Amino acid sequence: MAHEHKLEIFRGLVKFRSNTSKIWGVLVFLSIVTAIEVALGITKPAILTANSFLGMKLLNWIFIILTLVKAYYIAWDFMHLRDEKSTLQRAVVWTPIFLVAYLIFILLFEADYIYTVFRDGFVKWDF
Amino acid sequence: MDTTVTTGADEPVWGGGNRPLNASYGKLMMWFFIVSDALTFSGFLAAYGFSRFKFIETWPIADEVFTHVPFFHGNFPMYYVAFMTFVLIMSSVTMVLAVDAGHRMMKNKVIIYMFLTIIGGAIFVGSQAWEWATFIRGDYGAVETKGGRILQFVNAETGERAAIADFAATIPGERTQHESAKGLWFADESSLPTFTVNEVAEGLRANPNILIRTEQITAEGEKTLLSRPETLDRIKDAKYVVEGANLVRNEYGSRLFADFFFFITGFHGFHVFSGVVINIIIFFNVILGTYERRGHYEMVEKVGLYWHFVDLVWVFVFTFFYLV
Image 1 (cartoon, chains in turn purple, red):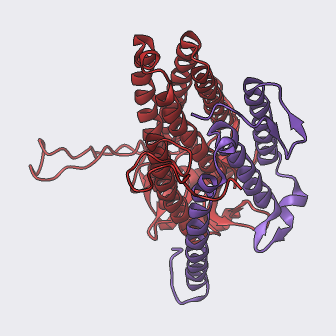
Image 2 (spheres, helix red, strand yellow; image 1 turned 180 degrees about the horizontal axis):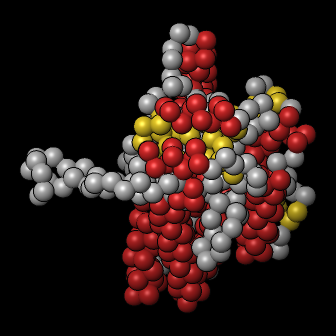
């Protein structure tokens, strides 16, 4: 079994002394990210909700990006993918990313089409 | 190049036993399971996104639905879910610490950390049960129109939501719940709402400061508030009184919202529950010294993978159900 751990995170910006201190460091980072998410979710700054990018509010983009950041650190440090061979990392990460991106693309486009049908078509639903 | 998958010439290629990915059979199978389970959850969340995009202008606003914290009264959007998220991340941390202690063959530390992980999981499942109970009970009540749209009520003076119990009139009536024992033996109905549509409509007419709030989301991202004449006109469409949530209708808005809530958080809660059960089994195995005799704690590592995966899924559920 592989006992050696890679101890630096943020591309080598922070290097921990031991695996245990790395775990606590990642916890602190994840807690900060969650706190930012909750704070943004409660305050909902007007500048982020008023502007949108690619049809989605900036606030929601921030939430999704922060979620992916959290997912990365959970997978890399808690599930210790960081210590695995890159073949295993790629098999685990890219398979779902490819399939899920495809699924989301198809379903959301279709849903948006149905939304326009409900809105513009001769369908009475609000009665 | 650690990317290259080759086995050394001295290893048997087809006879088994070689590890091109440098992971044991059991660990690799756990990864296979996790990837397929991740796809299942992605399917659910994508389906949620589908329904939400379909009804993008009428979808309930999560901040207004999940506002409760146990033992506290008032409006606290999201605090409790944030607490649950933190509990789950924390139990993930104790799990990694257990795996780490296992690598160093420190049995007592593994026991302590596994125990803390189980406690964290139990707190999370309990919180989720409470969240469900609150969601099912509901708080303000609403009416549903003939077309299946939900109308909620707002106090015009304070701008706060008005509960139907606060303004509904009392009209004496004979209507009781139909039970199969009392009428047709092959027919019964679920429990009746506290108020009838007539009582709510009468109360609305008698209270000039109650307004109707429709599902429609305005450009500012808030629900549409009708004026008093519009309110009086709209209440004529009311068909049912809805209190709380079930799989058919819910007082928060779109029916699909409650369905997806029950399905996705339920499926995730079931994963947490099974994770706790598996953790307990491994916990006792550690106490009994099974892995000490085996010479390694890889089993702890494998359930650890599953446990972190449950945490990982929650991170996404949290975002897409409560934040976005």
